[in-house]
Structures are given as structure tokens and as C-alpha cells.
Image (cartoon, rainbow, N blue to C red):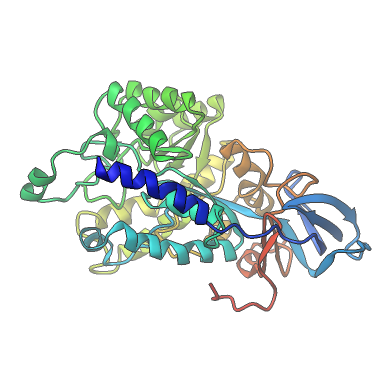
Length: 439
């Protein structure tokens, strides 16, 4: 009781002392070209007037006279809506030490690391992210919203929901003594084995302040378990997650590599399938019928396939899964696009190095997805997945999330790696000439 009383006293104090930055001054952005996310076309010169964190108006012509406001010259650059990465894990980053660090580091260690990762992600042009599994991320989200640290706007899942021994079971790989000491994880820890457990797990995420629900519908590549694709929920369990999530206004993202688990997740009504490695014609047909989004995460697949060749990078139980499954995701993305499955942008960053997220665009184009469609997947389409209508496009009344880069990314997708201007909610976080590695 003393602990609860202390927290009750400290929480108002913490909120009262949080510093909120003053609103940014009105600004005119003079853009040489403008990526129109709705049409997928690059338009000619335009000037964007930004005020109170929103786009107030847009004037044709990059030299438009906007009196009384500060001007930023981007006439030799292409302006675009800020990008959204729908699948990140911003609290960590893969390394050969990842598995041992889980036993040595505290949440505060991951929290400190996440600050730098968030800054790198924002400076790379990603003004929003959906974090699909990370206990410290809701706190990072709050710190960013309060102006205490710089980073993208975050939709945080918090703890992922899985089944006993499944991809999200936090005790996988523990020895018998440690497992006995800790005891079996349950819905509070995100592990379920029934319909009632499923409801409780979603309600626990609500209690903890999550923005979205993430389930692991099949085995995974990097978990300390043998199967990377076996189904790990019943349809009734997933449906209980989805129905309960709907009660709280949540959308549900489903990690899935295997065909059967993927089909069950789509049938039960999830919003998106993440990875989708063994996606079949049967699954694609159902996804199109139900309007289920596909978030390929090609970057993660290629990264783990490459690292599987390095002795000691992954535990031996993980290595064959990484080699087999990772290499297939790019081909799956190509097949899904050809078959008309709705695709949105996500990298699974945290598997690879934060700040390199835009490389996913290049891999999407290599898979046969047109550059304009790839760019739409991280702008207007990503906003649809999130269920928001105030971002993802450059239009009056929308959030002033604006990025710019030399070159035309529709003509040459490699331009996405050269973002050197970033504005989020009307505040500039990066300007041309800044050190690319600055944080």
C-alpha cells in the first residue's frame, strides 16, 4: 500500500514538471517538387505555409511570396509527407549479444538506448512509427509527446500477445530451474491459452496504455524456439483478441510466417499481416476479400538471412530459421503485389539498424513494386492502416509532417536514402547541411 500511495503522490508531480516546448513559429517551405501521395505523382514547385503545427495553405510555385513568416529554401529538393514505418522495435537493435542481454539488462537500459534510436529514425524521414512489441516504448512515446526527447510519433503495442512456447513467450530458452523460479507467464505477461486469457491480455494492454495490439499468430524467426511457421492460436482465440480490441478502439497486427496461422488471423479479422512469408493464394484471396493489409518487412528478411551466414551471430536453434525464412520475404512481397493484396510499409527495424529504414523502399522496388506505390505505402496507405486521416498527405489542415531530399524518388528510388530535411508537427528537426549522424 505504501508503494501505491507513493506513486499517487509522485505521478501528479511528474506531470506538472514535464516541460512542453513552445509552438513553432509560422514557416513557409519553398519546395522545388512535391510528392502528391494521393495520386503518386511528383508535382512542380509549391510553397507550403505551416502554422501551429498544421499546413495552413499550399500555393503553386516554389517562389510564392508569403510575407511575415520565416522561409526555408527547398527549391532544389523534392518535398514529401513524412514517412510512417508500421513495424519497428525501437527499444533494441540486433547484435550477437541480444540474447544474453535479455538476462543482464534492465528496462531502464533499453529505455536509454531507445532515445538514440528514436532520434535516428526521425532524422531518416520517419515522422511516425508503429512499434509492435516493446515494454519501454509506451514510455518513450510519452516522453516524445511531452517534448522531453526527439523522436517520431509512436503507436505503441507494448507487450506482444502470444501463446505458451510461442514467438512472444518471454521465457523461451530458460532452463528448468529458472522457469520454475519465475513460474509460467500468463495474460499479464502477454501469454494466453484460452479465449478468456485472450480477453484479459487485451484488457491488460489497455491498462498499460497501448495504442495497438500485436499478436504472434505463428512461430517466429528470432525467438528461441524451433518452429518459425507453426500456427500458435486457434481462430476463436484470435477472434477474442480482435473483438476485445475493437471494444477499446484498437487495431490488431498479426506477426505471421506460416500459411495456416496466417489464414486463421485473417479469418478472425486482424487489421494487418506482418512478414507473411508463406502467404498462399488462399490467404491472398481472403486478405483481398476482408481488406487485410500486408506489411512485408523485406529489410528484416534480408538482414537475418545475411546474418545467418555469420558464425555465432544467432543461436543455433535460430540460425536455420533465419536462413530459410528470411530469404523468402522479398519474393512473397512481389507475389502479393502482383495479386492485388493491399500493401503498407514496414521494416521490422530493430532487427536491422535504426535509421536505415528507408532502404525498405529500395527492396520493394527490386521486388517489382513501382516506386510511387512504395512511397504511398509509407504515407497515405500507412495512415489508413493506423486509422487516422490527419497525416500521410500534404494538404491544408493536415499535420505539418514534411521531409525533403535531393532528387526525385519516383524516378530514382535511391533518393530516399538522402533525406536531409525533416519537419514534424511544424517543428524542424533536420536541415540541409546538418551532420547526417547527428542526434
